[in-house]
Amino acid sequence: MIACTSRCARWGASRWRVALATVSLAAATAGCAAVGPNFKPPAAPTTHGYLAPGERTAPGSADAQAPPPQAIVLGETVEAEWWTLFRSPELDGLVKQAIAGSPTLEGAKARLAQSQQLVRAASGALQPQVGFNVADTEQKDTAAEFGLSPQVVQLPSSFNFLQIGPSVSYDLDLFGGGRRRVEEQSALADFQRDQLDAAYMVLTADTVTEAIQVASARAQLAALGDILDLDRQNLELVRKEREAGSVPDSDVVTAESQLAADETLRPGLEQQLSVAKHALAVLTGRPPGDWSPPDFDLAALTLPGRLPVSLPSSLVHQRPDIMAAESMLHAASAQIGVATAQLYPDVTLSAGASGSSLNGGSPFTPGGLAWNVAAGLTQPIFDGGMRQAQRRAALDAFRAAAADNQQTVLASFGQVADVLQALNHDADLLGAQQRAQSLASDSARLQRINYTAGGAGILNLLDAQRQYQQARLGYVRAQAQRYQDTVQLLVAMGGGWWDANLTGASPPSTGVRQ
Image (cartoon, rainbow, N blue to C red; front, side, top):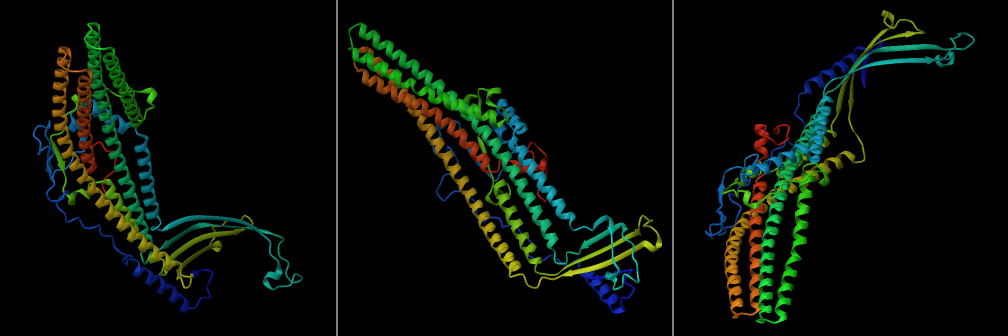
């Protein structure tokens, strides 16, 4: 380190020139660009669609009898409060309660705030560091320390030395290591913002999904109630026929067995309903014992007829998981610059002024004032290959992050393709289940008439009844699955969170990516 103070009056002119040259060189190079790569976001995908050639893109287009029809609108974006597409005030209120009461969102917001403070901390390290120093020392010296004989010079037994004054230091960050640290922390803050957006998206999706599950379980229980009523009607019919001597006792036992078998379906459906209600309580931040959600009905929900689907080039800027992977790629890029800067010299400027006194005297007298200016340079020479290994590790981490980002994009496209095809198949299945339910109902009605007229046995009647049971419950499940897959598509598009970020709508994000 080269330093100059008022106490170093014996410095030669050459040392002054070296010190000034060092400071001038440092100041001249302080604006140099940071070493390491400048991050560029990955290029948008060139693909224009999600499905393979020949696959259908419009749900319900192959079966006009599948009610209600849905249509894919390619190039449109999902609105922020996407759940309002189901036209249910109860659902809207429930989702808002979940957003307001979710501990998951609170934790995500706290982690974002933490990351933003770390950005400020890293930025603060680039500024001059000013301090104020106070030192009070009791000291005892001997004449021998100064090469004198104790018999010649008698020093005091001890004395107090007080020194007080400000100091300032500034790391010039010539090669941008500090700036790359700020960039890295900013990218990590972006990652936490993306995680918050993802938590918002998952929370709203889970809330709507569980609400539909409540409606599905209640619809299946209602269908099962109708089926059990028919079983009881069949049992009453068989008993009357037995009393009339038209059928044997075995028919009565068979009808009772059918009723008993169908009654076993109720506990499982009631358990599904309970689990969904408990999940909704937890999603809204309440214990299940303190709150119960509304009783949703499938009939009260409107299936969206227009399904907005963003282009692949837009999707990569909308989904929080893709944006989070890109943020980690950015952080890995900045870390390369941090590791590279450690291979180069580090120059620090410092200065200070102080007043000093002995044995309680005033430190602010002209004779007690001192100042210093220093320029320090540190250049790594040998470290056993540590810094080079750290840089190579940063390069490997960047390649890994790039692969992770690419895989996340591919997985998102695969998810969209799966859901689009699921909606096609849901429409086909719903139409088929509707026809099967209608035919099974007619068959059960006719078999009941034939049984009464003595033209059919009990087994034919019960077989028709079982087919009607399967068709009726299958229709309800297909209807609910279509709602669930519609939710999955809206969420696969990013759930509208980016629009909320830009407009300041309901998602609890703190701003857009810088």
